[in-house]
Image (cartoon, rainbow, N blue to C red; front, side):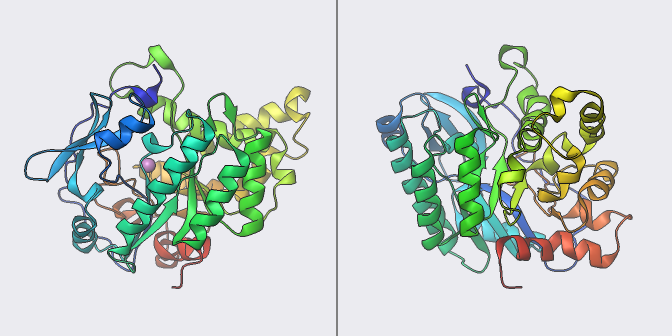
Length: 356
Ligand code: CO
């Protein structure tokens, strides 16, 4: 059983008690929603792997379900936009960019079925954001297992209210250096579609059964794998530099271990064979979000990526997200007020072409 279909038994959300509320307008570019998908709707697509929403009596909480199994405990703001906006008001967030919960991707299904599902999910997410169009913006999902269908859905979604796409970092055994995925990114570059890459379906299998290890250990490695695959394959030599591509969770392990990749590139020809330039020289082709939860990690991240490549991303409303949105960046002593404003607002405006 893959990590994507294993139950996430993490605790329910707890508030960031005592954290200070950040100052200045904030755009949070990494947040999730999950539509009110019925069990019947999910069962018609895939009885075991299509997710649906079980809402508890009272409507305040529920579970994302896979078949008859509970996958993750969730709260109403995930499917109720009015509740989401209440939270944004309470936390001083001007705008939140929301996208599917990765368990919704459907990359393991026949492509036509996944394309139909993606279209419906995108309509759900656009409708969710339409509740408050100045406060909520949508990213689309695409049937990434099929290049033509993925490109078509990305372009369709951009014409119908989405401001970018979210993709998983792999499709089965195919990583981002796979030619089909590279061509999808070329399409996004040519059409000016911003891309958020989210880790999912984590490696490690049976060795990571406990303590949410797939989320703590494998997820950062998945993200790093996507970024390093794009670099070492030489794909970034073929993808237009105009591509706006952001990796979640601060790029996972990427910034921390980029020096190791550079060292290996210098000393092993098999690492240089497809990658003509020093790996770290490609780092600025990427954006990352700020969801790293530690000042030392944020310091390294802005050193490696640059303050113009880091964007506020909370990963809310899940328990592993930043519960007081923006508190890490706001409280970080290593940035000027102007640099903080970039990370919390300006960079996302440029990345998603949002009017300031
Ligand atoms: Co996320």
